[in-house]
Length: 118
Image 1 (cartoon, rainbow, N blue to C red):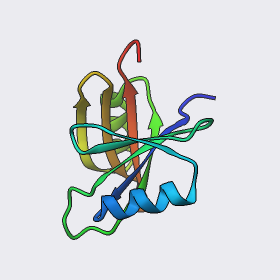
Image 2: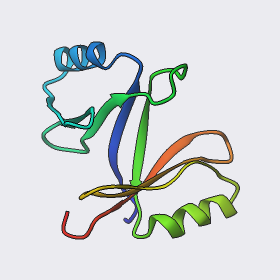
Image 3: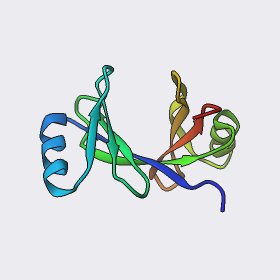
Image 4: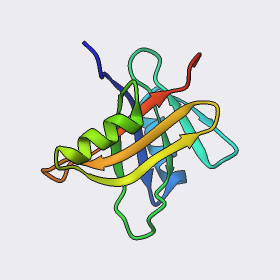
C-alpha cells in the first residue's frame, strides 16, 4: 500500500521538558541537530522528531506525515478536495520537501516527499 505514515513530529512550547519526559517514558534515542530540531529514533517502526512550536501561543501537538511522490501535486490536489494549506511546500535541505494541510474536517496532517537517495 502506498502513502504510508513516515514521520511523526512533536511541536511543543517546552522542548527540554518534552525530551526529558519521552526519554524517561520510552527507550528512544534523541539526536539534537544544529537547527533546533531533535530526531527521534525508535528502533523499529516510524520515527520522528521534536521541535519548539513556531507559533508561540499554539498548544503542543503531535503531527503525522504521510509519504507522497510529489508534494507539490499532492498539496494542490488536497486543496482542490477542500483542504486548507497551513504550510505550503517547503524544502528541508538534504532531506526532502513537506507541506502541512488541514483536511475538510479540521484535522492536520503533513505531506512528505523524500529527496532522491535518502
